[in-house]
Amino acid sequence: MPVGFFVASVGATAANRDGVGHLVVATAVPAVTPGLHLLHSTRAAVRRRKP
Image (cartoon, rainbow, N blue to C red; front, side, top):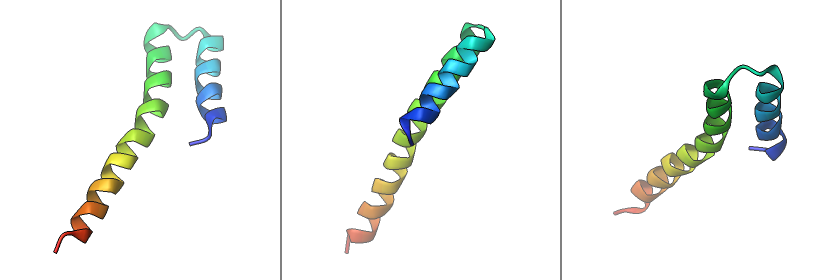
């Protein structure tokens, strides 16, 4: 995920003053999503390699 989308999400939420809860979600979701994708992808690749 490009860093610009992450920065824009957090920046827009902070600028709108939506509150701390929205800021936490705007920070956590883009940060966690690539990790979950990587975890899912590596598990699928490992399963295919086993005999």
